[in-house]
Length: 339
Length: 144
Picture 1 (cartoon, each protein chain N blue to C red):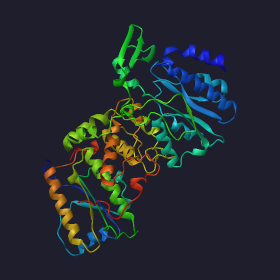
Picture 2 (picture 1 turned 90 degrees about the vertical axis):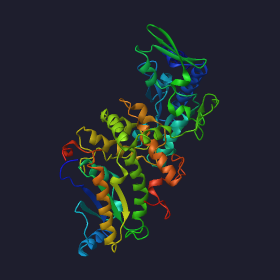
Picture 3 (picture 1 turned 60 degrees about the horizontal axis):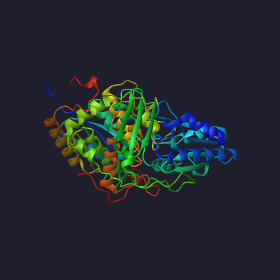
């Protein structure tokens, strides 16, 4: 195993093992532990991250054999949530291991609460996370592809063909990381790497929702017309969402056809209304939908608006906690009435 | 404002109360504007919020959802769920740009013919001032 690990390090270089050196140590530990889990037959497969297209991107990696563990990476660019890939693994016997950050754990809880994933057949490997870089934000800034990327002393160091760019890391983190209350996942089966010191999480507010609300009815309609007109109907937002796990999606059935195949702004309203409303009260606030949207539709402004409404009407603050009953699947006789 | 334009309202009425209430308005010879097209549903709980979106897409200027009063549901609890669901849906549609006056959810019992007639009249007046709905509307329906 040891030799392979070193070979992997050489292949990945600074790009894969970004940061302070602590990260690459975690990469070692992760590969070693996963190799052990697979060799010992404790899991039949492991879901982690592998090197991606560019230094700013990772891709999900399914590891089936112990020697494959060497290809796993852990760094500041491991944004994707892997929990939803478990849906494809429900048929086959045996446990599946999956790498989770705190935010991914919420997705996991959602899938378990929805009875789509059997917690007993999953081995959660948690990793402390100091915050994930929003690759989209960085890519929007740079013209050239990033050859190597890393973090040094709180700075994002990016190597392109024409030189090195340094950016303040804090400004390029994913939105969800700014609100992260605990960078170390709890309730996992196994932890890799050291505890990460928590930072002053910004309290979540609904400023972006209030901004839209302030536009007035006509302004809001014009705003959403503009946003939805870009939609490609690729369904990436639905596919990535841990709360969107129906076996048959109402947006894809032919009878009744809720969503005709034509692409018009009117039909985009149906699509986005339906997507957001179907996860109302179940959204885990992970922001994956917005992160994967290829045309940057501010989907979280929809999800957050619903969260805000549900919070104000029914007092549900943390819908991703399993002990929270789904607010739209229950009632009390003295709920607020229409006026 | 188009010439001779009249608001078009889609009314989802629950079979057990509001549909009977609407019927009573008719049999009592109460006068109210002929702007509402009633669609009978087994319960207000049948009204999927997508129905409302679809109505606006296909040319409705207003949508009325009418069900039994809370506590009176023929199916005991249907309208309690409706109350939660449509409370959220209504605010959300407002957030997407639908004027709140275009969507009304109300409770009409089988004996409240007058309330049904008044509701339709009020809604019609309000929507007449607003003019045709443009939000979410399919281009095929944009001509009027």
